[in-house]
Amino acid sequence: METRNADANAYAAALADLEQAVGRGWQAGGELGEVLALLDRDGRIDDFLANPAVTAEGKSAAVRDLLGARIHSVLLHFLLILVEQGMWHCLRDIAGAYFAIAGQRAGRSAGEVTTAIPLTGEQVKDLESALAEKLGRPVRLRTRVDPAVIGGVSVRVGDMVLDGTVAHRLDRVREALVRV
Image 1: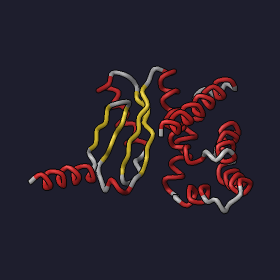
Image 2: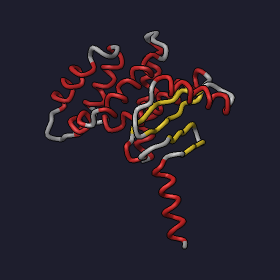
Image 3: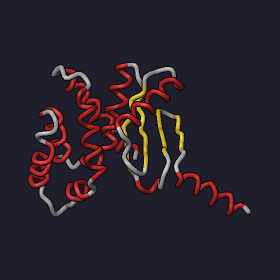
Image 4: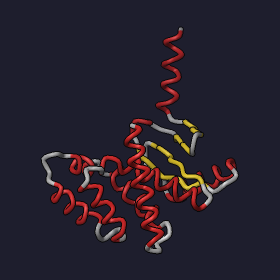
């Protein structure tokens, strides 16, 4: 896992440096968020890109067809490199590291919110505002949908974790029952 994080950090830093060099600021962050939301909505995309029977050329063509009109060419080429180098499975880690780098350079904190169903843009902004007030600095959240949480919200910003999910509460009840 340590190597995966090191790889994710290296790729994220390269993307951040590239975005700055071409004068796009932090626009890849919004586009990455859209890509991740798309992946969360349709798990078949990750399944296809992880399939060893599909050639790298086939995977690259699919990424081009799916994302080419949605994202800037800089991010598209970056994603194609991930596909060609067999690193697509690290995309979420890379995105998280990218958000952290962008936030650090802009003086904000990056975090992740996990819910069973997608949040609206307004809900995310309200949550970011509440966290910014609590932490005393701006917060940028990446959303992740995971039906396994059943309900509620889990938020991670840096080392702080707020887990109000139904799954977490059920785990605590289960642990209490085991002790009895």
